Amino acid sequence: MAYSEKFREKLLAKALGPDANVSDIARRAGIPKGTLFAWVDKAKLGSVTSRSKKKRGRPRNSSRWSPEEKLRLLTQAEGLSDEELGAFLRKEGLHEVDLAEIRAAAIAGLEPPKRQVGLTPEQEENKQLRRELNRKEKALAEAAALLVLSKKYKAIMGDEDDDTGGNNGENS
Image 1 (cartoon, rainbow, N blue to C red):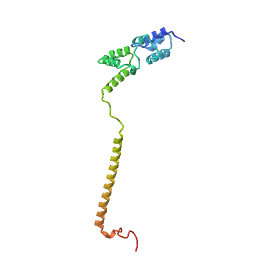
Image 2: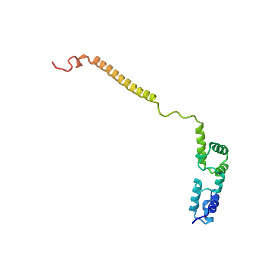
Image 3: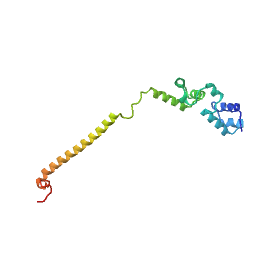
Image 4: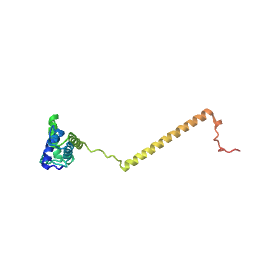
């Protein structure tokens, strides 16, 4: 069934108002509550506009708001009680999540820029050279330890067990 634009706008104004019960409004108007819920969802997404939204002229998507508008919203919302904040958000067509996103973006804009994540080619080469040097130092320490152990073994056992003498494993 097709409904007039005026009828739709009137029902949306009631359904989007404070303390609105969409099911009751749909029942009183004689339309399926699923239809009214769909209109409300579309209105919240901005695809169906009501006269009250046209008057305000503010986009629902907070990322499209100007910085001045965002600052105004933050300053007006600061210090409001829960009931006042709820009324303010309904008047502005916002949700608490939207306000939180605007606040987080403002705070992030005040922080100094983060350092570069990637390394420069010189830093990458330096890192690679340090790894190679560390590996070689460990290998040298291991070789030195084996040499010390070998000398201690020879000192304890004597030269009689040394079969590395001058014949290189040849039998005469």
